[in-house]
Structures are given as structure tokens and as C-alpha cells.
Image 1 (cartoon, rainbow, N blue to C red):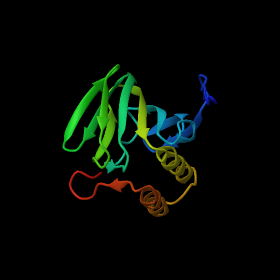
Image 2: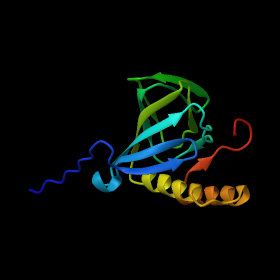
Image 3: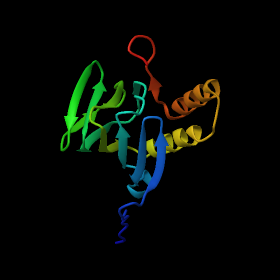
Image 4: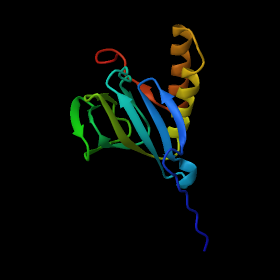
Length: 155
């Protein structure tokens, strides 16, 4: 019997930047047989809120430090350090940092979320015009089956 182990030491992991947070890939899908991924999300109250969106995979947030508001469907859930929320696939959601900053673990099923975050990071580093940025972000969301909210309640 073979044993496959992945150890991620403090400061290790792939570091990515999304419009609303800094993300470190702690466990990529390739290290978990494609079953799940784990990310450290570090966000500031000053960062722009991400758009409401629905992913085709379930996920959970576990707050390590600070406070966040997770908007899931039509309800907002305030979470403090030590608290966790699970969000079903297909649920419109986003988060807002309520404290000065917050750190939380994001766990998502499957192996697509790291690719999604990687593509967002690449678009953000491209120095694109706002119109080009909007087009590229929609290409990324379409590629991964992520639906953005439209109309009322959308940013």
C-alpha cells in the first residue's frame, strides 16, 4: 500500500490575489484526489466586496480571526472566529469583512476553485482597461460555471 502525503509549512502554498482578498492555496485538488481544496483567505475591510455569485461546487467558510458577513441566498450570516458556515452549490453568495481584517479557511468540493482563483489572479495582474477587465472576468466565470448575480442586489 502506498501513502501519499502533502505537507504545507507556514508561508508555503500558492499565493493568489482576487479583487477582494489574498488567497493561499493550502491543499489543491491534486493533493486530495480531486475531492476538495483548502484555501487561506486574508481580507481587509477596505477591500471591495466581491460580486454575488454562485459556484457549481459546495463550499464552507471557517473564520480564524476577525468577523465576516456571509450573504447566502437572501440571508446574511455574521461569523466570528471559530464559527463555520456551509454553502450549497448553486447558492448566490458573497462575503464582507466586518472587522478591520479577517482570515478564514475556505474549503470547496472538487478541484476547480484553485483554477478559478488562479485565473482571477492572472486577469488582475494584466493591467487591463476596465472594459477589457470586465470581459476577461466574465470569460473566467463562464469557464468555471460561476454565475454572477444580475439585476437587483448585484453590485
